[in-house]
Image (cartoon, rainbow, N blue to C red; front, side, top):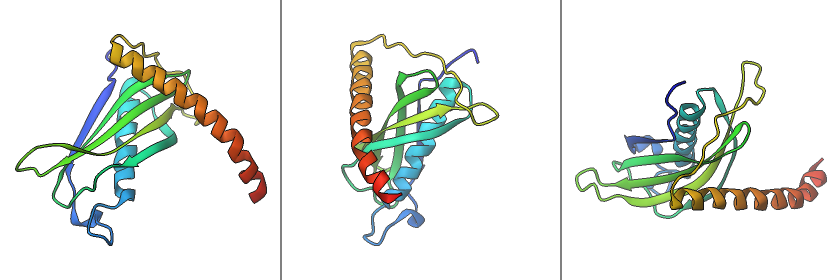
Length: 161
């Protein structure tokens, strides 16, 4: 692949089928959109089929209403050997006004896999701006925190076995 794409934005209208019992767009619908954008971003960067390994830190800041124009933006902020850490922002607006407001944000980790479903290498992303360096440092800190949380969660996992 000659040109790696680091970011992608998906745009669409929130539909009545996306609504929960409270009349707003269902969180599960938003999470699906997040996963779709993360896949498009990871596949565009790696040139390979990718799977979701982690989605976390999801914050639902404001509701999305039926008929809103939704923009799901995904951007690579760190790469490992086979993984890509992707920052996701979801914004929505009345399509007549186009004044975006942040509704959701999170981090998703995608892993590139080969034909046998085994992790395979991805191109390294190197930050060049101060903002990108900050994003990469943040991704590394979050990775360290997830390891600690994972160790603590082992107690619960063993209990369920």
